[in-house]
Image (tube, rainbow, N blue to C red; front, side, top):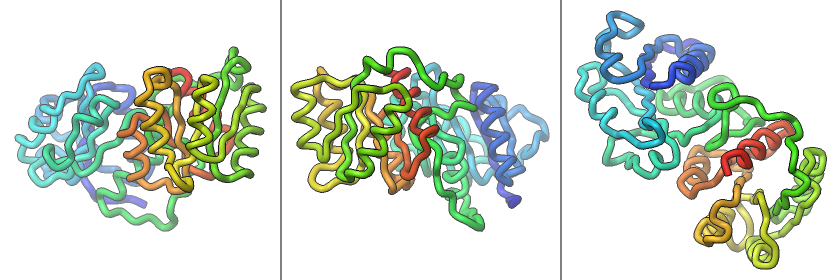
Length: 284
């Protein structure tokens, strides 16, 4: 499905820029102009858009891990961007710094993210409706996209047997399935809790190296649990993966804002869980 929307992609990393542009073109967004900075975009002659008005500007506002929102203003000073919508790409520090109303940004994606979430967000901002909705079976949200941001992890990394994993879900069957998946991945020390109260009691008696929690549960939610963990100095740096059958953009953004290590939509495959956990542990 080809679209006629004009997209400007401003990304300082050439590797990531090329990968994102490729994803856009593969999804039918063929009118993409790429540049490493606002100045480079302005100096381009022709190159897809030239001086034509831009419908959507995809802009990385991180520079060396530090948010630099001046890049948005630099683009707005160019005539081609006067009516454009803006999609900001930001790491955790940048995510907290971007005020969508104040900075005129339509949406923010927390890096790293998966390719499908990126395309879904672009489609939503441009009003593109595809024939069938996407059902996520791969990691989305503030989760690594291996093709864009990192090298692949081995199937079984050493040391997993020594990592205690806490699985929190009100569904007995879900706890059982996740525990089975973890065992196949080499995680032999797995504790389970049916709710946040049980989970917090367990954390008081035994530290863990990784937490996997459902987002929606009776009583306190997974976000409440995450906030409590991040507020405790002894637990604050524990890798924390949120899972949910409600894989909306708002839930993905909330996971990033509350400093989740990853967000994984249900249902997920063992391979998706493998990728997410490997990434979360590596970042911790």
